[in-house]
Length: 272
Image 1 (cartoon, one colour):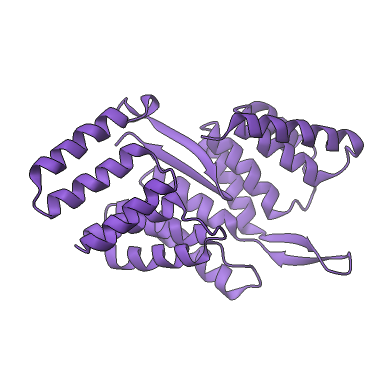
Image 2 (image 1 turned 90 degrees about the vertical axis):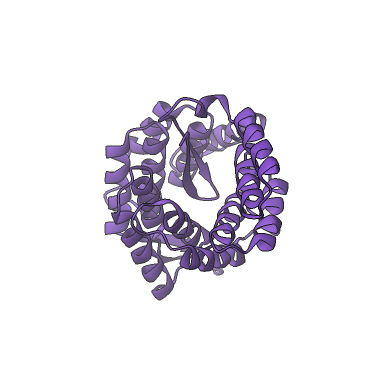
């Protein structure tokens, strides 16, 4: 969840910037993203799709797709991510005040996340292609590609590989732009260590995930797995009970899904 007070303040400041120069597309994009973070997906889509340039940058299509994803319009989300993948161009400012074209392949990790949510086996091929393109181009590596790959390799039936997942999670951890641990990276790093029976490393990752404010339900579930693997049945059962107690209300119904954005990515949690 986002801190809505911070989102509201950012919306207010961005609204003032839009009033000063309504023609700036980047401000509109930022304003639309903030609207989606505040739960106003319909208004965000109206802004993003009002005046789409003929050669819209890939980042714009990723933002459009992300807002559709948050509003559960998955067909439109897929179309937008595909547009971003088909023409992965973006511009960035140069030190002399000009601009240059660079590659922007974030549509791949977004589409792979959507495919994972739908249990689509294509998800692994999608993220691997994105990693390949990002590594070969002039785009700065983003930890999200490797985090999504680790998640796919730990949770998608038919492609699970804890060793490769662990390697991907470690790369994601190294690429994380923040000095503090990322809660999702540490969650899936912990799970990969548990699958590999590296219990001490798993416990350390679980603690880092807890410190990074991951959802308590997942911390307790991971602890339950660690205790069970260590032969501590009573502690494992206690952790499972606490996990159920800490399960968010919007994830208590079977089949329920909670969508969000995180560090330039789209994300989801499910009741299963």
